[in-house]
Image 1 (cartoon, rainbow, N blue to C red):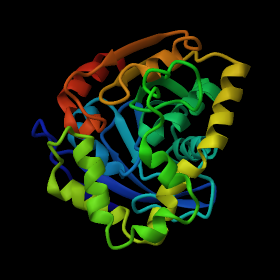
Image 2 (image 1 turned 135 degrees about the vertical axis):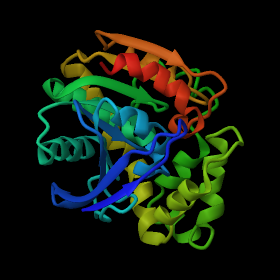
Image 3 (image 1 turned 180 degrees about the vertical axis):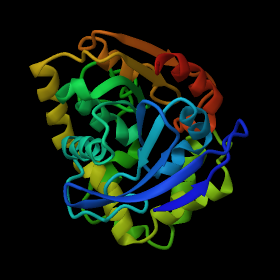
Image 4 (image 1 turned 120 degrees about the vertical axis):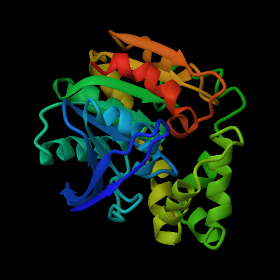
Amino acid sequence: MTITSLSGSAGRAPQVELHRVTVNGVELNVATAGAGPALLLVHGFPHTWRLWTDVLGDLAERHRVIASDLRGLGASAHAADGYDAGTVAGDLLALLDAFGEGSASVMGIDAGTPPAFLMAMRSPERVRRLVLMESLLGTLPGAGEFLAGGPPWWFGFHSVPGLAETVLPGGEAAYIDWFLDSGTLGEGIAPEIRDAFVSACTGSEALRCAFSYYRAMPTSARQIQQAVAAGRLSVPTLAVGARPVGRALEHQLRPFADQLTGHVIEDCGHIIPLHRPEALLRLVRPFLV
């Protein structure tokens, strides 16, 4: 176990412990901080657990925060397969078991949203509150306006097996920088976090793992369809949008959710926890009670 400290945007410096935890045969890199009711944070692409740096201190004042690098990403093991939302949801439930947590609030963004959603649909007794951000849930209706011009260009590029990880090595930094700049409306992120993200996506094997989440999207979409056909989302849920997803996720959730609140953060890019951390905290503090 490694112990380090991070400073957040509000000047808080939580003590963070780093763990190696094996779940479902895959070794994950997991950060924990704080004490209290468990709060599981689930990042997306091209992130690691460091996505939560600027909100971690505040959240750790009230919660035992558990923030894992997802399978194949960051410092977690490069798994051969298992990148569909259902398998990743199983990883996350097993992670709660490993830390002795019967239930947790769960916050997911981007590629972390579908597994967080399936956790709540499949095991609602394990999820107290659910925050979902800046993602679509498979092919559920409601995202028509967002998809009017077609899906984002990188979805197709990342989905072709063997292509992106063959042509990108050597240019990873420039490629990841495009997503970080776009996701903060050109403002960028702290250099040390940017460097951590670039390092985590450098090399053909790291890229293969990252893009495997896109290649598993058809499977994840089927899992989501099966979940909403079998039941409703009973967990209190907050859907948070920014640019570019906006209210598309809220619209997808509305027909299936019993307790849904939707909010769009204005003048905010896709990478909400790093671009507008204080705005995000103002929303989630009263929700994660």
